[in-house]
Amino acid sequence: MRILIVDEQPLFREALGNLLERFYPSASVFEVSSVEEAAGVLNQYVQFDLIILEIFSPSQQGLVSLAVLQEKSPNARLVVMSGADDSGAARAVIEHGARGYITKLAGGSDVRNALHLILAGEIYISPSMLAEGKPQIVTPSVPVVAGVAVDTLAVAGLTPRQQEVFRLMAQGLPNKSIAKRLNCSDGTVKLHVSAILKALHARNRTEAVRVGNTNLSP
Image (cartoon, rainbow, N blue to C red; front, side):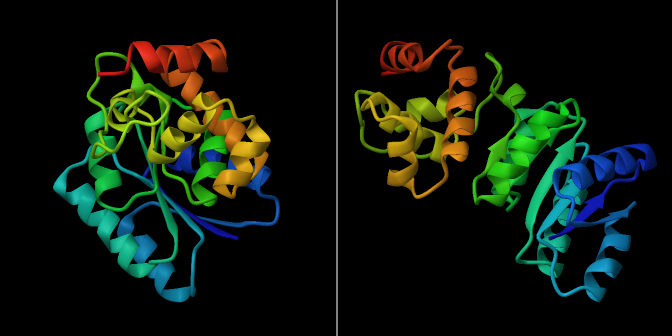
């Protein structure tokens, strides 16, 4: 696996690079300080599996940078890491093709879990984006399943995949059955369940379903 880190801060690049080498010992990790430098690297290699780009805010220039990297390496999963704990920034980069938005305040285990989900094909947004009172990323409304409308789950900050997991949880399915139904691993389901509990401020699955059915339903 090839991973490219694009960040102007040398200390952060080095620390993140070391972390990624621990997570993926067989991976080749490249570090550059700018999108221009990244473009040069991308012209030399056939493909990167993962590109991590620092964007402080979703300015036009930041979104242009995102587009440049997507054009140069269309098969890579592009992740934004940012010092801006801003749900608006998360919305903008996801809408422009990023597969994840991770704040620089995230701990090592959070980064590992996020990348696990992203590499498995999911979209990840740091839990701090789900804090009460902040704007949320809302998806179009779909029919109610197990008494909870998906659009209300989206308001709670759940990604579309987490909404699927929640609906199966609400039907009483255990993790193994959910994994089989969604064609993913048990570990991936566990990560989704953990994110759901955190987003709904629930201590366990039963409480999460109760909160979803009462506080989130229209």
